[in-house]
Image 1: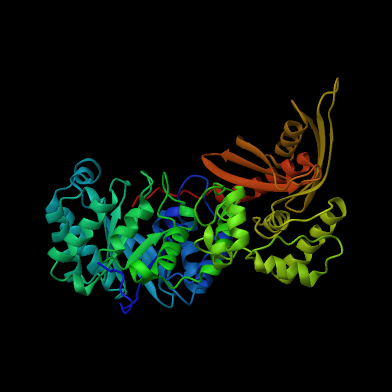
Image 2: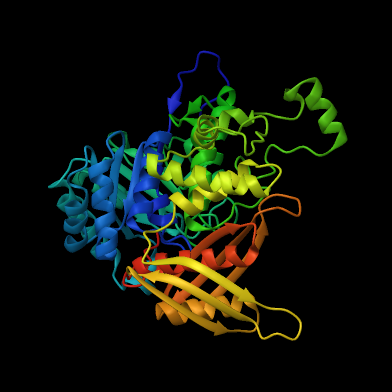
Length: 519
């Protein structure tokens, strides 16, 4: 186990990011191909070692996204997930074969619980399937990873038998998932140590771990694993993923970076890009980060206590064990207004972690100027909201042109809406229980959509009576669920923008059927 030694060799942990697979398959986090590509490019820039781009057999959409990522990403490995059967493995290879460094990640359950109730197979049958899958994948690429799903509830002797067999079959990475988040740190660390001691060929493979957060221990378990010899960690941005999520990449990376003195471990992540990456995921999925979340939460570097403030003014080290700059947060708030030029605006957008095309920058800057005429001060959150609305939206099938609402005491709420639908301009009027309801019903009539509103949330992006309102809606149609966001100083307009955004994103999702694959 690494200890505190001044001359101890530094070991680097491989970061296997599964935001686009395990993270994306969780409720509310579905992304279209363009959004997945944007995330993949950001992960590449962030410095992850492996991107698990998706589960190619799940749907044509997932296959296409994995293939495009494989074609685009050059600086890190691209993995495709496959169950332990020929069809899955062949499909995964078709999706990733154009990658500069492709990896096939195949898996099968090994716990008696899963064998009995899910697979309905005995141990010998599963062992044979695991070996066959690795050999099949090995025909395509030497870079094969095998996962023993539900490893933490698997009989240890049988687990080691399976791991020995798949290493002999050619797996160069063996993954030990805590699939249901059942383990506790000392137990999980002991399991990794047991595997190292009882699998004679373990030196031929990298030990990886994939921890879920059902008991809030995913990061702690991952840390226990690397302290006992694991050298790859599977994690996600913001900890998103099935159920309670996965190990949070940013938390694990900053633990390794901050406590190198004790662990002699680190990663190759460019930590200054962590915050921008976190914000990108939040913007695309519409799933907010809790304010008190470690590293990237809004309060992670906020200090209100008078004692803390006094200490910080004297020396930051009194109450900050890492700097906000180290993860990409500016140490001071930049307040800009209508007199700011495009260069200053572009610098701030870049500092916040966004990279815009010339066309998007032009539109975003125009929106910024319009807002600056209405507000006394513009904050970082205002800029991020504009960027999110303009550059992160799905391609538009539906476009809002004009809207007017009527509401008040004694009046029947009504909305007149003019939209462009597939290039055709349509105008209609509708009524509802309030101005927002009237607008939504009118838009549904114009677009011919029959979505059901699952969530409607309003947040003030900044303080003050002239603050922008940010609206998040979640729509469901034919079993497909999608999040939409909109921001505006007029809350009704923000609501309509969010609704139209969700409809556009639903258009790309509703024909896509993704199977939930648990690991």
